[in-house]
Image (cartoon, rainbow, N blue to C red; front, side):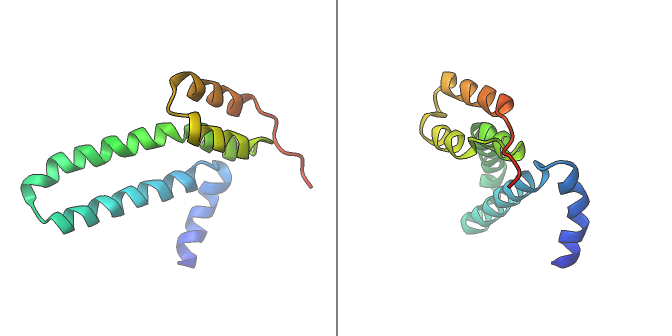
Length: 110
């Protein structure tokens, strides 16, 4: 496990989005494989893969303002996260949150 972290650390230092997106992609793959094993039908796998990929894309786009705020270390990351959870499904609020995450000032170093 330590070797994986050591290999990933140069990537994470260059882009803070790499680690959260890698964890998210891994979770999607594990859920898709687990569901496929539970169902056990080869005919179901192709449409199921499309559904899982579509849901993963929608979820990734839904949490994009939160990921951007977290990666930019914005001052109001918690507020952006909470509003994203409760109002992010509306297009206007999602766009406003994304703009807010992009223009927010970074937290001051303590």
